[in-house]
Image (tube, helix red, strand yellow):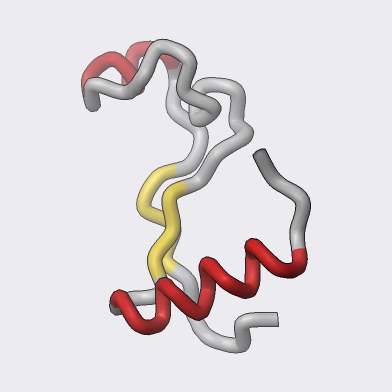
Length: 59
């Protein structure tokens, strides 16, 4: 839907890795239910955010 590369900077984190990066103890990364992504610029991230917000269910 976005049509351009998206870089995943963080996905699943084991509890040990999550602690080492000072992740929240309730982080959804530990459950495999979160990903940090970027489209490369603030402008493109805004477009990607709006696409996700408007087309997908998430919490």
